[in-house]
Image 1 (cartoon, helix red, strand yellow):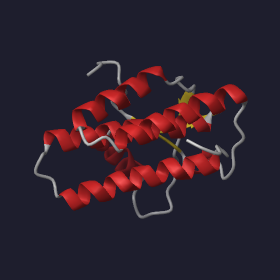
Image 2 (tube, one colour):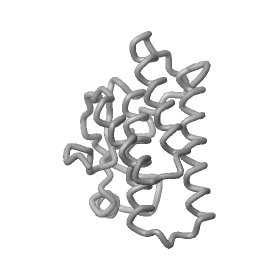
Image 3 (cartoon, helix red, strand yellow):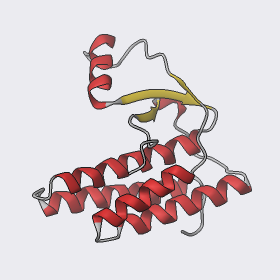
Image 4 (cartoon, rainbow, N blue to C red):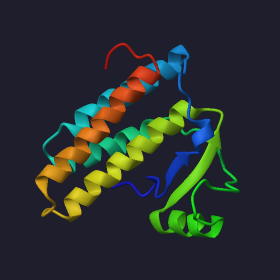
Length: 153
């Protein structure tokens, strides 16, 4: 697989996640295509082929401009240092961006790619759990489709 694939999962901070989002025509076409291709890849029984398809989508999707978010407090008992340790261990970065749509799609693609990679590395995973995770990713595609007001995939 390509070495230029993201190694971190960039997550928008919660206050950056839109409840509604209108895309311009070019964004709409790019995101519709990416989500359609991801849906097709996730439904592909051949995991190697699915991984290659997702890598191709990641490599062709526009890269959003992001900034690392400064998380100064949490509504949990975790300290900021605890959160930073967790993020480092799981390779998560909290970001902010003026392009939340691309950030959400990019995050879903990276998550999907890592899921398929995990399936390939661990062929003895419980098939029911794999199917449930796959369905969760597909449901997220449909959620983004509604959020971005895309009529069809």
